[in-house]
Image 1 (tube, rainbow, N blue to C red):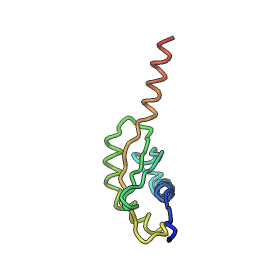
Image 2 (tube, one colour):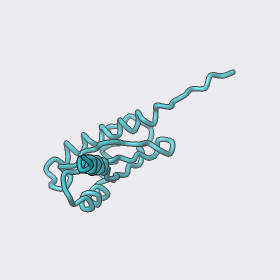
Image 3 (tube, rainbow, N blue to C red):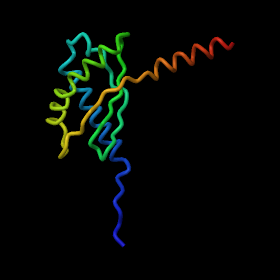
Length: 116
């Protein structure tokens, strides 16, 4: 019986690699940009046979819609630069999603403090 090769960690490894490369691109190319300079990537998930990676970001501004629109506009350029750095046959599609877990954690902390 042939041995089945398991690549259960492959999605996580590809997602982490894409996250690192995109973070470097944002740091290197958008450091002077007032909208994108405060963006931090906090997580990533690969789906669809590694053809799609969702990148979760957090920003240090209250205008999340502006940051989201700007990231959506720059996605094609970022993906092109990612393709030059990524050593894979195919370059996955990327999508940016705001991660509000820090705000939710802060709200839970506030609620717990008010219980005392």
